[in-house]
Amino acid sequence: MTKPVVAIVGRPNVGKSTIFNRIVGERISIVEDVPGVTRDRIYSSADWLTHDFNIIDTGGIEIGDEPFLEQIRQQAEIAIDEADVIIFLTNGREGVTAADEIVAKILYRSKKPVVLAVNKIDNPEMRELVYDFYSLGFGEPFPISGSHGIGLGDMLDEVAKNFNKDSGEAYAEDVIKFSLIGRPNVGKSSLVNAMLGEDRVIVSNVAGTTRDAIDSKLKVDGQEYVIIDTAGMRKKGKVYESTEKYSVLRALRAIERSDVVLVVIDGEEGIIEQDKKIAGYAHEAGRGVIIVVNKWDAVEKDEKTMKNFEQNIREHFLFLDYAPIIFLSAKTKRRIHTLIPAINQVSENHALRVQSSILNEVIADAVAMNPTPTDKGKRLKVFYATQVAVKPPTFVVFVNEPELMHFSYARFLENRIREAFVFEGTPIRIIARARK
Image (cartoon, rainbow, N blue to C red; front, side):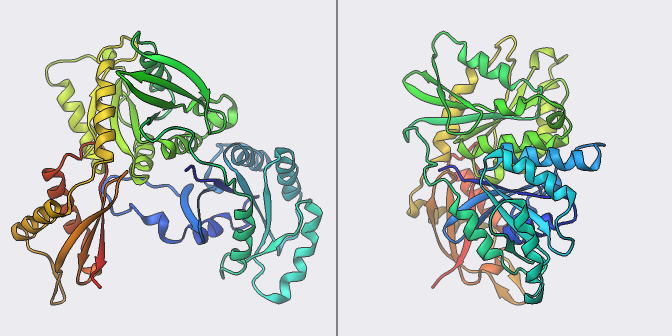
């Protein structure tokens, strides 16, 4: 199921980031305690009642040195490209401004569902300020207050009405879906072409369920695959070239639909900060991950080069210590043949389910080896564990008091589980719950 995308659009100083943080709540800090994950606040998961969705704060998209009104226009156009529903945010205290009217014209041409929200309506006496905003042409404006959390429920009800109910995947359960993500010019498209160009691969192109993308179907040794294209990340134009965060937005769509994500790194340039950002989203989404070092043919090598590069990756991507690393060249096709077996293995591990009896033996041995921590005289007691989900493998550990399960001890249990079972390439989630 592909989650709909909501974008918050508006001129500066209308409170976009405040509303964004209100909607996502604590979710923004889900992986802040995972070493090496680089976070930015432009994009996050959220939910409202029974609806899960992703949300974009366009205020976090920097457009370089463009003039004020041009930046507003470009941010609005990026949101239009990416969003299924748009929240058009205005400032009730300042009334309708020329910049609001510019945004309104852009959104009106987009044909996307738009929910108009008037922010900073902090008390009932201010509601009469809302009436001027009918002139923007988007129907009834929703009075809200980001600072007080007033009116957000009614606004989100309206947003949810515009979600497309038919957003499921069109592929069979046994089809392995994978995508290649990474910053521009690391060789993603060359790598896709190299994989599709093999004689033993049957290729056909079908329209993908994601806008602007073509999914490539291939079959190797009887197994069907879908390469989820991120062609939209290569979109030309000043607005897209001036912001690295745009490529992250496009990668997120592909990550969400994938079973396995190939994080592609340029072997010549090495690792930069954006590689970590994009990889961090794949980890947070709970997808299987393979780190692919492309352009390895262009690197001057000795007997230690590969080992040193791998060590450098491990130091930068501490949160992906479970991901296998493959060195290859899309240009020469050297080691391309190693990708499909690795994808198969990671996909299998991602969906692996273990027996509860064996799992609890592993947990008991782990606790015996490293006794549970204490806090203020209270000791964590681990009663039993069970696997509750796959893709990614998720384990619930029943304990006396969940708050005593420190991150470091959960990490220890994860490492023991990894030693006992084959989970290479997939994140593992451990949830502590009180035994009832």
